[in-house]
Image 1 (cartoon, rainbow, N blue to C red):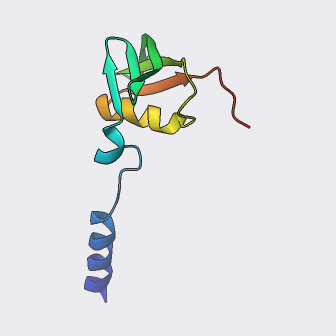
Image 2: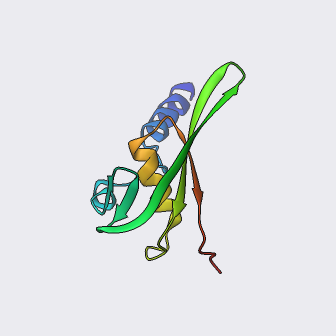
Image 3: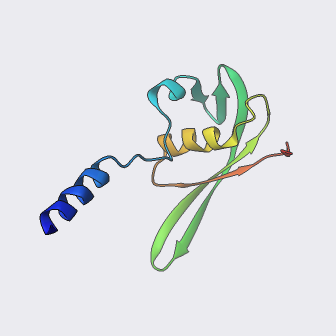
Length: 100
């Protein structure tokens, strides 16, 4: 029984999916040039700053962006794209387009 539980945990652990990344198909629609992020060649957001934080002896970087176009209507995909490019940094997105 013990081996069955361990085997089940190994199988479930190996099937874990990182929900904070884009699939290869989704990533093809995204690109960046200098400080501008593009979705299907349309400018969507710009980098505004990088914040450095020191907490509990660790320095953390936070990438700050402002959404300049709401044509995609999918802010989580934008954040995931940035996370794919900078997996060790925090991502902050300010949007001027409220969702209902």
